[in-house]
Image (cartoon, rainbow, N blue to C red; front, side, top):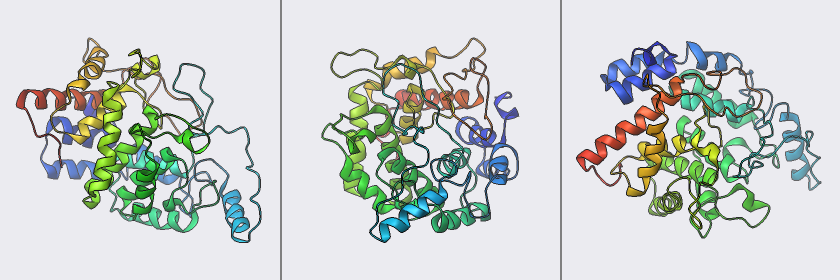
Length: 351
């Protein structure tokens, strides 16, 4: 605990809330520091006056392209070609081992996700101003659509819901699109827009996480809860990391824990979701939880592993193979929830 509490304010306030069970006033005081000190303050200082980072939505220096695309489509003209044909799609890396292409993480969308995970108070003046500026000025590279309207990629739309919900922006149309995009097997897959594909672990986890957060913010609906629970069942039937058909580990990299995980999938990210959801752990989580426990080092800490390549404004932690406050916090949160819930026989799901 002493080591964790020596970290960034973004780490400290979550440790106080989730591990130490500190009084709410102490947690709030520490969280208020996030905006002004450390990682979040550095990211906020990089925001342009129009509310964007790196002059783009998903990719740097694409704001002008997005605007020209929107203008062309509004005029009934064909959109211009994307200016960076070498940039990979966010779902370009298959759920199999192999070399990962680099993807930039410096534009508006990934930075806003970082700020949400860091926990900058959403009602702060800077975050509310950012929400208004992004709604006014930021457009997706896909068809120049407004940021909070989402686009066609279900992983990107999941992040849009998370950001919008965090900032208090109405993103219900994006939620309804994701519900409509759910596949017959209960999962989601960003590739489904381009070709037939089964559900994807990575896409499904991102979507159920976004739907859960939206439900808790708005009260949700039976339709959305049903879609989210079907997505959870997709993951649980596969014990979070095994093939449904043969039972083998789908991707060995999923047993390495990165931070930030971005849109990528791993077992720590998946179990952290179920800890957030709360309630009595499903028996099919046992093996995944043991994978998390097994990664704990002799000194009680977890390591940083498998950092995903791509340009960033700065790294939260480095290098791989060294103790990670983020992974230690997240893993402790998972183990603490699992042990407390299995011993007490908690409710089926935290509302």
